[in-house]
Image (tube, rainbow, N blue to C red):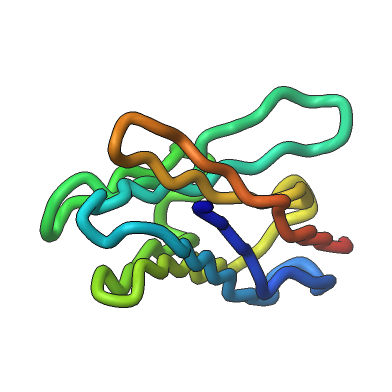
Length: 115
């Protein structure tokens, strides 16, 4: 059974930083493509970041220059470093792992940014 587990959320004041982690337990052969999304109360799910290829990561315009995606392929783990956080970044952040014809999503980790 494939599990996706996020960690690292919390509360921070505007301008602060947080780092999130996402670990996938599954078949390494599947080479999961791991992406980050977020969903704020009353809003639709929003794409945040995804690894495209070596040296290339795609970000939502709203987080470009502030968030940094990185990954440890061997450990099937991805990280999201969030700097210069804004109140509008408040949301439930979760990652998706896509591979071997399936998509798996974690329960998410809450990020709250106060002004």
